[in-house]
Structures are given as structure tokens and as C-alpha cells.
Length: 289
Image (tube, rainbow, N blue to C red; front, top):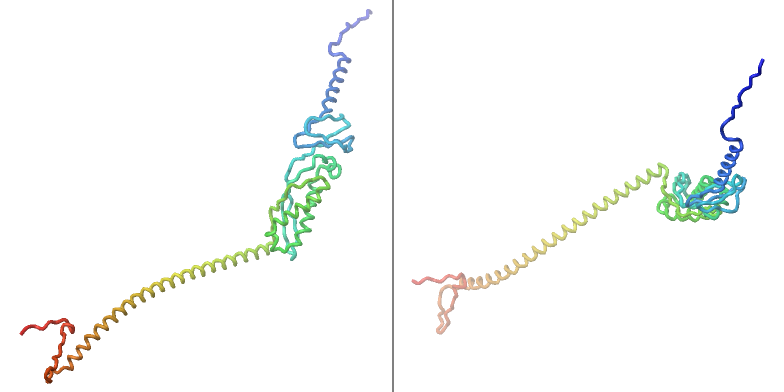
């Protein structure tokens, strides 16, 4: 039986050598790409060498790193807000006070590696919040409850100083602190409300009394004016009455003289005949017979 021979088929496609070259090129490109890292604006790069923090800090922009061996942790060094949770503390009289606030801070760009090495990425919960908590517990008991609200600014400044000192060792710089809210126990708030109502009532009564005093002064001024007017009229009337009295007195004297005259002329030779001015007595002129 004759042997049958199969035809030779030549496999078409890339040769193993070409595939290897492509793989090497791909790995080389990947290696070169991984040798560069971009640090965004407002950030710094903490460099880890096989997990250990290096001394150098990467600036923002394009930076070179050793592939595989080095890893970069990006840290925000811009000013950023951090809200505080509400914290309970007792006042000087052991009245419960609740404080909340906010802090603006930034990390010292030159020491981000130290902060990361000491605390890690979650430094807000590990360092900032406990520092504010300790401050509230330490400072609030020094104030009577009635002075906490009026001295809010003083408490804020003390918080700036205290937290600034505590966080400086971690290279966290405090830019500003706000005491956003201060709350008291419900019993004390009711007492404050009752006091405010009482003060408002006192102020209302004071205004009423002031209004009444003004009205009384107006009435006094009116009465004084009327009295002065009456006095002027009375003085004028008195002067008129006085003049009238003097006039009547002169007429009355003459009238009395007439009454006493019996109509007889003087009997003595050479005696004067009395003259009576009848016109002055009434202004009447006797008629002719």
C-alpha cells in the first residue's frame, strides 16, 4: 500500500521573535511612563521608597521617580476648612455648654513628609479634632455661663493660640478659627428667655412712664401758660378797676357835698356863693326855664 504524504502548510502570522520585541517595547514604554508623576497645583508629593518615607518632597508639576521602587502620596497644602463636631463642656457653675466651630488651616509644604510619617493621611481626625476637644474641656470651665457668649471673641483668640501651639509640632498651621455656635441646656435657655421677657416688660413700662412724664410736663406747660394769661388779664382788669375807682371817688365826694347843701345861699355879706359843677357829676346840662 502506497504511503500518502500530507502537504506542508506554512503558518502565516507574526513570528515569536516579533512578538517578543513588541512585548519588550510595551514594557519599556510602561516603565518610562511610570517613571514620571504629576503633582497637581496646591499639592506636594511625599515619596515612599519601598514603603519608607524619604526626605525629599516633590513640588507641584512633573517629577521623576524610580519605577516600582518609589511611590508618591499627594498632600494638599492649600488653605482648607475643617468643621468641628459639637463638644460638651461644663461652665464654671457646672452648667452644660455645647460648642461647635470651624478651623481654616494649611500644611507647611516643606514638611508634608514629616506629617505623613508621624500621623498619616487622616491627620484631621487623629490630631485636629482631639486638639479642639482638649481646648474646649480646658478653657470653658474657666468662664461663668453668663460670660461665655459676651466673651466669644476672647475664647476664639485663646483657641487660635492653644491649637496653634499644639498643631505646630505636626507642621499644621492654623490660619483662623470660628466659634460658630454656642448652645446651653434647655433649662438655662428657658431661664434666659424668661429674663429677656422680663427685661422687655421693664423696658415697656419705662417707656410708658417716660411718655406719661412727657404728657404731664406738657399739661404743666399748658396750665402755666393759661395761668400767665389769666394773670395778665387780671392785672389789666385791676388797673381798669383802680382807674374806675378813682373816678368814682371824685364824683362821690362832689355828690356828698351836694347832699349836705341845703340850698341856702350864704347870709354873710360878701360871702362867696358855692359853685357846683353838675357836668362832672353826670355830664348832664340843666335846661333853660
